[in-house]
Image (tube, rainbow, N blue to C red; front, side):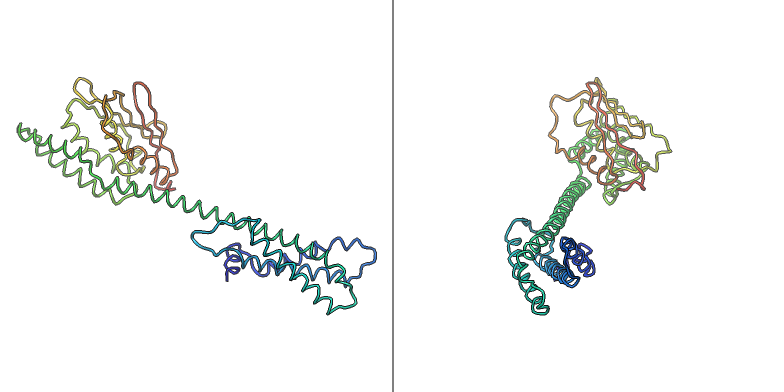
Length: 343
């Protein structure tokens, strides 16, 4: 059964095995063609013994490979399996030569047993090496597939976590801002509540998607920007200049929001030192750029934000996010992607 499984894996039919056995048997008998007094019947016997032995070695070694499984075993070429195959081959070769000698007594086959045994060992080692290399390739592919699956699952887990988390600091600061606006009887209090509601509703809706259009992302971002401007007032200057021709491009949900949050987390935001964030298109990339005015003490970061965006672009679109850090500015370049670019 195992041999049949490996034949399916290698796309190796019985016909292929038999044809290869005849070819190997014929090649093994070529030296006899140069003998001066060689009978045609002797040549056929020589080819017959080598071919039958090759067929046996094929099926024997296919049957003795480890079971096909999700976690394949590592095997050694020079090990018990090879020794067992060689010893069994020696016995089988004696059997084949003896049977031919009994059926065709006029040929002195027993006197050439050593030559047949040597030939059989070469054939055995050659087939074992071929199957070993094929099996090792199978193991390597399995391991690589498992690693890619693990990596993909890890990225997806991070993304699911990212999609489901509501930044407690942002919520706390938003409610504090709302409290202050209500106490001051700010006319924009009602608008602020509506925008806060819209922001969290759109966040919940975007959790279901792996990517959304740039138009949807910017539309959802408008509520987020309103909340930020209400909180920081003139301390934050956020400019979005993206031509409508790019509206149908796609990107991972929360990408722009995360980048803006990252700017605020790591930089000073004040009326004396306004934080300027510019989002625009440049060389087929969405650019998120801010002036670099690093805080002295930065809140501890999980590292899930920027890294997750990079991994999601690589996994979903097969494209790389570029990060440029200069003394005066920080820039993130998101490649323009479309739905047909799905990786």
